[in-house]
Structure formats: structure tokens, C-alpha cells
View (spheres, rainbow over the protein chains, first blue to last red):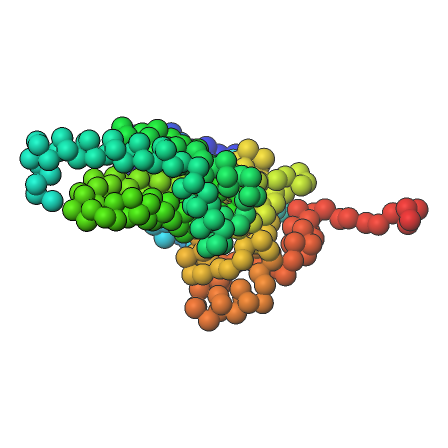
Length: 117
Length: 290
């Protein structure tokens, strides 16, 4: 299933609905990069609240999405990482370094507002 | 002795034990007094008063004779555990408990020597019957005591664990986590889980972890702190670590823990002030209040 991407003013919101295969993650990356350019987005929120597991491939992909979007002129924030997911990510050494994280969608949008003015 | 399996010898062992028990019951007061004197001489059970020692020794003596008479250690086991529960909080050591039981064994053995000193063969057979039973009693009492002690320690550890990990909200979106005591792996994990749940429940943006109460920090504990900081960041919260003493700071740098990602401040007060600044609070002093 393709991850739906919503447009909200100058931001894009990718709201993951279920566990994703590697292929679907890469699809999400391509869609976000494409739409960020098309809609001239200044910020992107990726909501991972429903994910029970973020493995090394997912973490690496999320990180590269952030870096790639930065090069396309948009800030990225990952929101909704659950406590158990955060613990296992840290134990696996997946720390999403250089990528902003926030508690939930509301926080993520507030951070984007503070960054993009 | 191999001969013990012979039914006839066994029977005579039983009758010897009966004789032995009768002897011990007859001389109960004399032997018990001798035992108490030996305990006082050896400076054992100094945490207890003389009256208490007399009361406990009487019970132990009767239990002891009972075990010799019936061959069942169950009642003694219960009594020993009960006794341990009473005397452990008063600082009685394992060596003391083992010491007094061995003293009783010796006192009783001496009385047997005196009784049978004219008949060496008989003494030999009485000791054959007495020694295994006496050793079994000593082992039972010692292991009951140690078990009780371990149970107490486990209970206390559990109590400390539950008590010492509060996650406190002091301002809107600001949590404080004072860590007190040794930070082992299990506790660190529990602490991280509690903190992350607290971050979600209180929608915290800033967390101050105060480790003033952690006596020493080794590389394992330091890595736990680093992991907690990282995991909190993944949930969108900034962590400030406070209360690193100069010894702790030296240790961490010497053993080469990567603290680059840690936001550290000297004491809890500076941590609070920094957290308030991050959250946009401005605390001012009212000049009308003295």
C-alpha cells in the first residue's frame, strides 16, 4: 500500500498507516522527493506512530529521506516514535543522527513553524 | 559406615539414639547452661540480651533433641527460618549462627564422652549414631539462615528498585528524573522505559536527569545514560544531565565514554534554569516579597 501524502499549506504530511516493506519505504522516499519539488514544500512530517518496529533499513531510509529533502529545500521531522521502538532503536545503534524528531504531529508542525517562520 | 545398612545394626542405632535422647532430656538444664556459657565466652550473639539468648537457646535445644528423636528436620527448619527472620534485622551474622550450633554439637558430644568414658566401644557406637544427625542439624540451620538472608536481600533490592525511579513533572512539559543508587543494567532499562512513558504521558519537551545520587558511574552505567538520552531524543525530548561530580567526570573521560551527544550541567539548579530557558519560561523575583 502506498503511503498517503497530504498537503497542509507549505508542508507535506506522510502518515504511515501500517508496517511497510522495504519496497514501500523506497516508494515513499521517491514520492516525497517528487512532491516536495512539485508543491515547493518547506517542510515534511513523517508520522511513524503505528510502527511497532523500525529496523536498520527503515532507519537508514528515514535518515536519507531527511538528508535528500534538505537538499531539495525542505526540513524533515519524524514524529510518533513509540517508547519501545525508541529503546530498541538505541540498542541497535540506530539513532537517526542529524534528523529532527518530535513527539507527535502537532509537535512536528510546531517545530517546522519555528524553523521556517 | 557400611555396616549401617545391616538391619540389625540399624536397629541398634535406633535404640542408641533413644538412649541418647533420654540422656539429653535428663540433663537438659545443665547442658543448656553450659552451652549458654560457651556462647557468652566466645562473644557470640552480642546483639541479643542474656534473657533472649536463654529463651532462644532453650528452644533450639529442644528442637535439636527433637530432631535426634524423630529424625525429621522439618520442624527445626521452620523454627530456624523463623528465628533468622527475627535476628537478621538485628545484625546477627551467619558465622554467629553457625558458631552457636557447632558449640551445641560440641557441648553435647563432650557430655557423651563423660557418660561413656569407661566403655570406649560403646562411646564409638553412640558417636556413630550422634554425629550424622548432629551434622545434619548444623547444615539445616545454616542453610535456613542463609536462605532467609537472601530472601531479605531480594525483598530489599525490589523495594529499592520500586522506590528510586520517580519521574516528576515540575513545570508544563518539563520532567525531572532524580536517579539515586547504583545504576545496573536492569534498573537502567526500567528507568528508560519509565522515562519514555512519562515523556509521552506528560508531553514533555525537556527532561532533566539528575545523577547526584549515583555513587559511581562505570562505562556500563554511562552507556545506559547515553542510550536514555538518545531514546528520549527519538521521542522529541531534549535531555539535560546534571550532578556529574568531578570524580565521575574524570572517570568518564578516562575510560573514553562518548559524551558528545550529552547536554551536561553542574547541578540540578542550573539544569532547571537551562530547561526553563529552552521552554521559554522566565522566572523573576518579585521585589515586594522579602
